[in-house]
Image 1 (cartoon, rainbow, N blue to C red):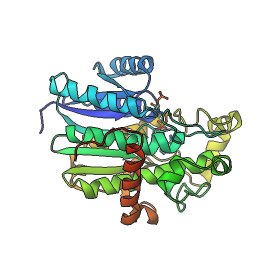
Image 2 (cartoon, helix red, strand yellow):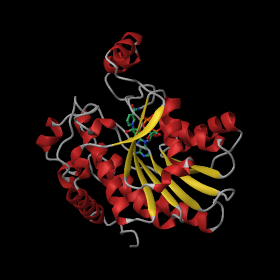
Image 3 (cartoon, rainbow, N blue to C red):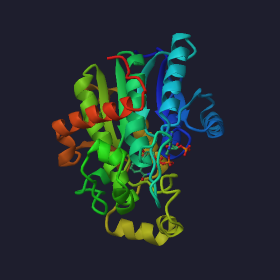
Length: 319
Ligand SMILES: NC(=O)c1ccc[n+]([C@@H]2O[C@H](COP(=O)([O-])OP(=O)(O)OC[C@H]3O[C@@H](n4cnc5c(N)ncnc54)[C@H](OP(=O)(O)O)[C@@H]3O)[C@@H](O)[C@H]2O)c1
């Protein structure tokens, strides 16, 4: 494949790790075209401008709001048309990076799903499934998860809930009040890993990786958190304390580049269904949480996700 032009879609490319990752891919040379996917046209133009200033390359953009199934479907149609028209080089990779944390009262997607699960899992699942038939061999999918999915790792503070798609997507009034935003987030990140491993099982022709960027405080992820938490995370004293207790904090550059390396370094494509973590400037393969390897749970999550999406009259992708 060396020398041939290829496209990689990076979702959530307007901010934080996705923006850094897409810029690093663009900086790597003309072989890869990073297609910047994001929900806001103005922010997409600003991201493309920033990458142009950093690398000299102009990246194409794709509008997609993962909180809207209609938008996801329209984005997939747009992408397919541009690939078929030769406006984009053949698609060989997808980085499912977009994600959010919701603090405060529960919010819903356009289609009525709880926002965290709706965007981080259901939106990502549908977008990947619609894009999957457009991927040409050899193909790579990277699903950005988080060490917070693991109660034995960064998930000590808010261990994930049981992964039951319907209860997470359409919570009862009581659950909506009772369950914290952080628990919804860690659960959605566990769903990301279950999805990545199930995709690797169902599509052996695709090389799939799940990725934990590690704690990286200087992105927009906690932008909606209470001011006190944002101030704490930005404080030098707390960062020193983290270092003292050996909790390593990553930089946006380090974790974004690590994400890019999972596509750019083709030696890593040989293994599929693996979990990688960025830590102390290194990207290493490691084990995810015990429950993330539950294949029956992953298969159920897949089926239930399809069912939830089909109930909204969005047609299924071709088998
Ligand atoms: N930072 C960390 O410590 C950390 C640790 C572990 C895992 N992660 C994961 O890393 C990924 C990137 O997060 P980040 O830290 O870089 O945060 P970020 O700066 O907030 O970036 C998140 C990106 O997702 C996009 N996004 C949010 N909602 C969307 C929607 N409805 N439709 C389409 N795009 C949407 C955002 O777009 P807008 O610009 O339009 O808001 C933004 O581009 C996430 O999956 C996160 O869970 C982060």
